[in-house]
Image 1 (spheres, rainbow, N blue to C red):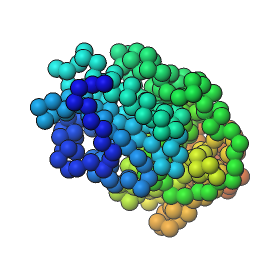
Image 2: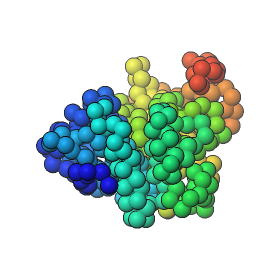
Image 3: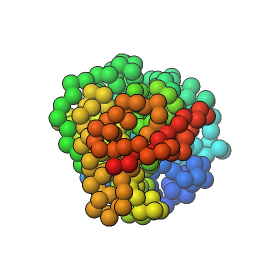
Image 4: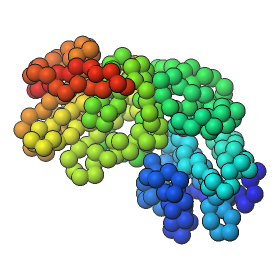
Amino acid sequence: MAQNYARFQVPIDAALNGRLQAFWRRIFGDPDIEPSVFLGSEAGYNTSDLYVVEESGRPVSTAMVTRCNALPELGGFGEVATVPAARGRGLATDLCRQSVEDFAYAGGKALFLGTVNPAAARIYHRLGWRKLASSIVWANVTDERSPEEFLVDYFSNPSVTVVEEGGPGARIPVIPLIVTPHDWQVLDANVGIFSARYAVVRSCMGLYPKYHALEADGRGAWFAARDAGQRIVGLSTAVLDEAGDCRVDGFAHRGSDGAWDDLLRAAMSWGEEKGARETYSAACVEDEERIARLEAMGFRMDGAAPDFDLDGRAVGAVRMEQ
């Protein structure tokens, strides 16, 4: 194991957090995980183990595993960084290997990460991660199933769902839902989420912040459909635009298709409570099933909407108003 390696469970003390935030800003710029998380803001929802190598009182290499308390079989892997002067010593490889071993020992089944770095990808592959098609997301499935097999098994045996306001407990469970290929091309225009069947999923631990950011100024909200097994099987959003209208959107896993109506109603109700003048949704013209579902809920076509950009392919859109 790496020299001077230490393992901390979040929350960590403010001094260490300060050193780490400065370290990550130098390497990543803006990290995917908010600084307050390391001080315990999500302690009731997620458990995070932080692996750190420090030399002369400064971090030189880090990695972190975040597990969902409601679904500890799922984990997100991130904050993998090494200062340039310490690269080539195997520090990150050692931390990654230890992270996977600890995750599996604790009963973890699938550990997700995102990378576009070919050199890092080679290391991850040697340590058991496998890339999911049409994404930058990799999964380390501890019982050696392929990521695709894991996703099929994970979403099998659908059950009754409950729609709730989105929150930190969704940080990890949104990943398997979003990386699963869906029939609809545009899953949620409010947060730029498209099906992996039609466009590359370009984020992993950055997926949850897309939803969390909607709440920042009070002009947006999001909702999650959670089943009896605590899996998140659908998501919806509501955003007030500059005209005071509310744009709603959302999707659900095919196995829990009935959750979609409840998710859209939750988003619509939020807009009504905020005094929205009108409620509408932008639908991809090629998602004919989605358009039909919206029409069944009382929406009607009201002209064209701006095209969607699916990895450089312009796809027409219509505005659906209620």
